[in-house]
Each structure stands twice: as structure tokens, then as C-alpha cells.
Amino acid sequence: MKKVLKDILYKVSLIATTGDMEVKVKDIVFDSRKVSSGSAFVAIAGTQVDGHEYINAALEKGAKVIVCENLPENLSEGITWVQVQNSAKALGIMASNFYDNPSHQIKVVAITGTNGKTTTATLLHQLFISMGYSTGLLSTVENKINEDVIPATHTTPDAVSVQALLRKMANAGCTHCFMEASSHAIVQERIAGLKLIGAVFTNISHDHLDYHKTFDEYIKAKKKLFDDLPKDAFALVNSDDKRGMVMLQNCKATHQTFALKSDADFKAKIISNTLEGLELDINGKQVWFRLIGAFNAYNLLGVLGTAVLLGEDEDEVMTSLSAIKGAKGRFDQISIAGITAIVDYAHTPDALENVLKTINGVRGGGEQLITVVGCGGNRDTTKRPVMAKIAVQESDKVILTSDNPRFEEPEAILKDMQAGIGPTDLRKTLTITDRREAIRTACMLSKSGDIILIAGKGHEDYQEIQGVKHHFDDKEVVSEILNELKQN
Ligand SMILES: CC(=O)N[C@H]1[C@@H](OP(=O)(O)OP(=O)(O)OC[C@H]2O[C@@H](n3ccc(=O)[nH]c3=O)[C@H](O)[C@@H]2O)O[C@H](CO)[C@@H](O)[C@@H]1O[C@H](C)C(=O)N[C@@H](C)C(=O)N[C@H](CCC(=O)O)C(=O)O
Ligand SMILES: Nc1ncnc2c1ncn2[C@@H]1O[C@H](COP(=O)(O)OP(=O)(O)OP(=O)(O)O)[C@@H](O)[C@H]1O
Ligand SMILES: N[C@H](CCC[C@H](N)C(=O)O)C(=O)O
Ligand SMILES: [Mg+2]
Image 1 (cartoon, rainbow, N blue to C red):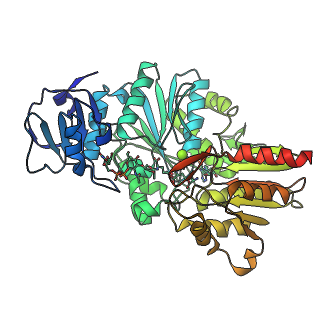
Image 2: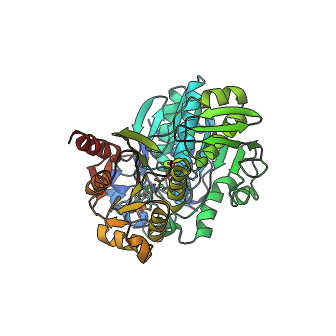
Image 3: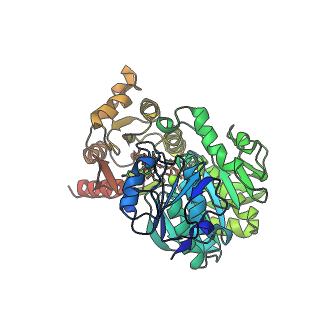
């Protein structure tokens, strides 16, 4: 597939161009290592290096077009040079043009928020499939075209992959796509060029301060999704979160809210909340859902609101939604020898607190709650002591362990976590660096009736250490160990 450069640049804010604008481009590439003869290379300033430093490398590999913010002093002949205001944004718009603007053919809804994006997007994907629509999904766990899985590397793919995936969805006849918009993706313009029919805000709490630096900047990142919405889209926010209304300030789209506590366009009351599911009162109708925890009542309301705003019948939505299970690795329960193990992707203070409070709200009382938790390396260090503190406050015993250490020393991460625990609570805390051993210890300390929460990695089937992903699956490991112990 080759496209004429000037068509690809439609709607890009240009500063200057030199060279042939009719040149045909084979692909759009933002990594010089992936350039081949006939590529257009887009130079982007990143967090590690500046793509402008790789313009020569891209030319050596055969790039025909260079798109950049700062032109080099000497412009090689035979190359088309395009100077733009914002190359990350240009990349998104160019990718959309290159793939014939798939988001103009599909109704794309983006979901943002610290927690609940994957759950909301996955429920919407399953809901729309169950209602007979051909539907796509872009999520942390996996990307999907109907039931076909395309592995995910990020919560929101890079700008070129977003458009390429949407093109595949459009070609497969998808009418809808539900996608997560991470704050990193919004700031990095991975969703530039995308036409959204709606955006959903779940909540905002402590995370990613390594990247955004301040909470205000993190809020601004989320808000940008709403600031950029067109007039004919909808903006659906959780108005029980005090930043929900902030998202709607100066937002041109139709304002819509969902809430459990305050008045809202989509409102519900929790009737019962058990380890089997949630019963909600929605507009006087009592509906049973298979998801667990009050926080999931918010996700369900976000899903219901989105579906209704997309034109679906509220009663039909509730009936279909009540049969759907949540996303993989979210409150995933297994019970072996009377011990309940819960694997959950809680990797933020708010998520951990919600999951632990949910368990404490439904447990009998005589049993122990043992939490196994760690924090990821090369990520926000300030959430580490806070997560450890929440774990000890809400559990009978805590085993601190490694999550994905990435390029950090696991012991250094654990030390940061321990700093959040006071001397009295340290007595109920063990620190076991090896995650398998930590899970084994939790199992050995448990007796029938006890509950083990294994938090932080949910669906992940690997542990990332020094750039290498080793197979590791919390659910698999805990099942193996509990079965082994049962036999002995
Ligand atoms: C911090 C972060 O978000 N980094 C993302 C960013 O990379 P970067 O800015 O660090 O890039 P860089 O290495 O400085 O390079 C700058 C530019 O030079 C180019 N380059 C670089 C080297 C070279 O030889 N040639 C070359 O052309 C690069 O391709 C890039 O265009 O842009 C890359 C391309 O899109 C992403 O893959 C990368 O994600 C990294 C791997 C990552 O771990 N990101 C995480 C934090 C992330 O994005 N997470 C969110 C979810 C968070 C959540 O809500 O929980 C997600 O959406 O997945
Ligand atoms: N609405 C919610 N409010 C608070 N906590 C939630 C909510 N929904 C889910 N959680 C908790 O957060 C964890 C992550 O949920 P989910 O994967 O849906 O979030 P996410 O926003 O996609 O996360 P990520 O940013 O890593 O992609 C869950 O395992 C659960 O513990
Ligand atoms: N999308 C999140 C995932 C965190 C998952 C946790 N297991 C970790 O590795 O920190 C991030 O990139 O921060
Ligand atoms: Mg997610």
C-alpha cells in the first residue's frame, strides 16, 4: 500500500516543506530502526532520546520523507523535508490518513481514568458482541477484533498501530470499537487523528507521578481527552469523583454523568455486594451482575451509560450486561481445599484499598486475609509506601514481594514499600523477594476458610526482570501450590 505524501499530510499543521510533495510513501515510521526504502520517518522527542538525532540513520536506511519539528542545517537532495509544529500529533493524523481514516467508519469510544479502563472497555466489547455487533477492543490485556486476539504491548498502542488496528476492524465490518486511553498515550498524542464518538472518565487517583511529575499535570493529561472531543461526541464522567466535573469544563461534547452517591444522568444504588456478585437498583429495576465490589458498580454504570448514549435500549443492555463476566485477572477467584485465592490487577493505592475493602466487607470474620503484594520497578516510587500501608491496614498478614522489578533492584523497591509500615504492623509483615516463594508462604500460612489476595499483576503472564520477560502467572502459580499442598 503506497500513498501520496500530500494526501497523508491532510490536516497536519505544517510550518515548511522542501521537495516533492507527490512522492509515494510506503509506510510511516517513528523508529529509525524500522525504516526501509520508501518510508516516511517522523522524528519525535521522547523520554529517553530525541528522534531528531536519528534522522541520518533513517536516511541511511532509505527514508524518502522526513517529518520533524526542527530541520537539520543541511537538507539532503532528493528527500522531502516537512517541518511541523508537533511531530507526535502529526504522526497520528498522518497514520489516520494513511489508513483511510478508519475511525470515520467505526464508532470509537475512549475510556480514561486511573482504574477501571480495562474493565469498562472489556465489558463494553463483550456487551456489544452479545447484542450482535461486530466490535473491536484495544486494551491492556489484549486487542480484539470480535473474538480474534491480537496481543497488546501497551494499554494504548502507538499512533500508527492504533490506526492500523482500526483499519483491520473496519475491514472486518466492525461498527464499534472500545479502547483505553492511558494518560501516557494522551500526552504522547497516540490518539491524535482519531475521531471519537464518545469518551468516558472512570476516576483519578495516585499513579504515574514518575511520568507526569505532579497530580495537576496528571489531571490535565486526562482532561486533554475531553478538551479535544468534537461537539457531536458525548463526554460521560463519574460525577462522584471530584475531578469528574473538571473533565467537563470547556468540553464541547454533550455532558453526561454517572454516579452512585450524587445526582446523575445514570444512577444506581447497591442493594447487595457479595463474593458472588452485585445487585443494583437502576431506575427502580433490580439487576444482578457477575462483577464483585462497589467499584465495579461504577464500571457497570459507565458501561450502561455508554451503551445508552450509543443508542441502545436500556433494558436490553441491562439484561445482556448481567450475564457478562469481568476482564481476566480482575478479582479472579479460585477455591482449592477451602482456601479462596483472589488474583487482582490492583497496582495503585486506590485499587488496592478498594479490593481489600471489598473483601473485608463480604468476609465472615473468623478467617484470615493474607495479602501478597509488590510494586513495579521504573514506575512511580511514591506509591510504594502508600500501597504497603494500605495492605497492612486492611489485612491480617502481608507478604511484600516483587512485581515487575524491570531495571531496579527488587530489594530497593521492597525497602521503599517497608517505609510505609509502622513498627507494630511490621510484625504481621513478611518480605520475600521471590514471588513464587511469597505465594507459597501465603498458601502454607492459610487454612480452610482463609482468603489470599495476590495483587498487582492480574492477567500478566510474565515477570519482567532486567528487560527479560520470564513466564509467571499468579493464578497458575497459586493453583499449582494449593493443589500440591492439598495432596500432602
Ligand atoms: C514512558 C513512555 O511512555 N514511553 C513510550 C514512548 O517512548 P519514549 O518517549 O521513551 O521514546 P524514546 O526511547 O525516548 O525515543 C524517542 C523517539 O526516538 C525514536 N528512536 C529511538 C531510538 C532509535 O534508535 N531510533 C529512533 O528513531 C523512538 O522510536 C521514538 O519515536 O513512546 C514509545 C513508542 O510509542 C513507547 O513504546 C514507550 O512506551 C514505553 C515502552 C512504556 O513502558 N510505556 C508505559 C509507561 C506506558 O505507555 N504505559 C501506558 C499505560 C499506563 C497506565 O495507564 O497504567 C500504556 O499506554 O501502555
Ligand atoms: N472503577 C474502579 N475504581 C477503583 N478501582 C477499580 C475500578 N475498577 C477496577 N478497579 C481496580 O483496579 C484494578 C485495575 O482495573 P482495570 O484493569 O480495569 O484498570 P485500568 O484503568 O485498565 O488499569 P491500567 O491503567 O493498568 O490499564 C482492578 O484489578 C481493581 O483492583
Ligand atoms: N500499565 C501499568 C501496569 C502496572 C502493572 C504492574 N504489574 C507493574 O508492573 O507496575 C504501568 O505500566 O504502570
Ligand atoms: Mg488497562
